[in-house]
Length: 176
Image (cartoon, rainbow, N blue to C red; front, side, top):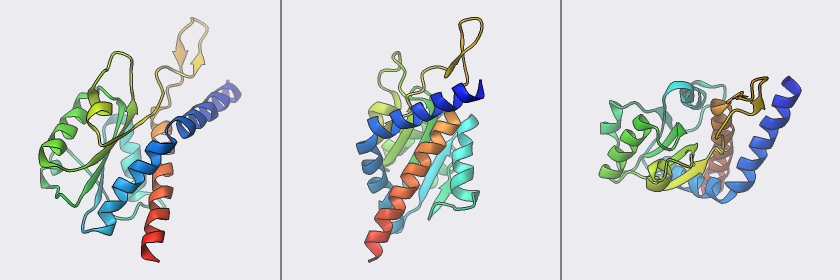
């Protein structure tokens, strides 16, 4: 089972990398504007997506100028700040609430979530840049015909690292 899960997970990572290649670049450019200016990159995620914020802020290699974002602290953001929203799906109500606040204040943001067929609109429509996690069901079949193994936080961390590396490359070029 672990071998099958590993194969499926690698396939998921490859699909994200291939299908979202241009969105990674656009998102990193948008986010890199914060540390170049006087802003910070705020990261928002609820439930399992809190793992991304924890990694970016408290991990072994934190993202430059990254801060965790909560519903309460969203009101304190400045136009120089940029926001990275992680959600399981593009219809996540809490993420949409934060996104609406950001839109009202004119603060650019990147959203990372899975676009479900029934969630037309949502984060994918209102974000300045959206990266689709492409995780609509579990990766493995069980013995009852269901799908299990839904690694949304692993997929989100994969996207986070892709963005982090690209942002660092942009900032290194800027400092030259």
